[in-house]
Each structure stands twice: as structure tokens, then as C-alpha cells.
Image (cartoon, rainbow, N blue to C red; front, side, top):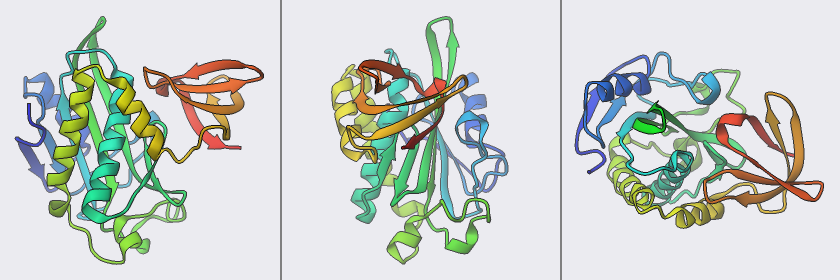
Length: 248
């Protein structure tokens, strides 16, 4: 399987994840990519909207058919792959905010959206969505997010084109996805930790549907769950449980 060997490109679509899901249900092979220059109804995690200005960002989704468990590791390995691709192609080292965000100096640079289709415990496919702010200028962002969003162009002070970034992204995604196939979670977790914008020992607040939990960040477990030390005990949270994560 080679990620990016087959790419379906569109000038505009509602959501690359939705298009990729339709293709996966019809039997499109693993590694197939849906790429759009604009999304009219792009979304992030927890149903949040993802702003997708035409021709300014990277908006794509990949069909994966993992043969092994470890779905919680997919957004983590994808975050590592995107961060490495940005570093290698642009010289910018983003931070990773567990479990889905790429950040730069506290502002959001990109995000990962992983959606699975299951039959019982069997994984039919995973749609891995990636959004990255490439060529936005400050005025391209709507007022409600302009103070918390950033692009590679704003960081570098020069234009950044999609085509200059994709070959490196395919290589890094393929390499890190192979770790999942080998059930090598340790390398994924350790590398994510090196990019993490939340250091070990930091005081954080985990917001769930039922409560806000305050504690000390103790890293990630082998399944990709966030471990929090709370009053002398350890509690583990997974992405599906969490509404928000913040430094205290």
C-alpha cells in the first residue's frame, strides 16, 4: 500500500472526509487520497467547523484499512507525520497538542480528524482527515478565529504551495503508518512526546461531558490515552471522552 498513489482532486467539495467515506464504502483501496482546494462544510473534531479558504490550505482525507488494533494511535502518528513533513519541507517545527492539533506559538496551524467504520470489533476502514493552514494571510481568517489561527506563510513570510509539500507528506505518513502495522506503539508515543507542546509535569485541565478534571500531565499510555495524575492516583482519558484540554 502506498499513500498518495491514487489521488482524487476536486476544486471544491463539502467535506473531504465525507467524499472519502463514500469511496471507501464502494471499495476504493487503502492509501487513496481525496484532495480539495476548498471545503464548504469542513469539520474538525466534536463536530466543530473547520475553516477551509479556497486555495489557501491543505484539505485532504486518506482511506486506511488497518489490519491491527490501535485506532487511537492513528491521529497521533498522523500528527507526527505532518509535523515532520512541515519540518523537513519548510524548516518549521510545529508542536503537537494531544490528540488532534498542530500548533505554533500557541496558535492552531493544523488538525487531524480520524473517523472509523466498524462492524462489531472489526475495522472496515478509517478515514484520516488532515487540514493544514499553508498560504493564509492574517486577513484570510474570519474574525472569530484570527487571533488563534496561523499559517505557514505567516510564519515564514513567503508563499507556501500545496504541491511543494505533498511528496514529503506521503513519505512520512507511509513510514509512520507502517509502525502501526508492526504494532510498534512505543516509537509513535515517544516521538509524539518529543513534539508535544504540553511538557511532562504540566498542570492541565481535562474537560469531559460530565466534569472538569485537574491534574498533572504524566504522558501517554501504549494505546495513546492521556494519563493524568490526580491527587495521588492516575486517570486515563481517550480522545472520544474529551471536549477540551488546557494548561492550568
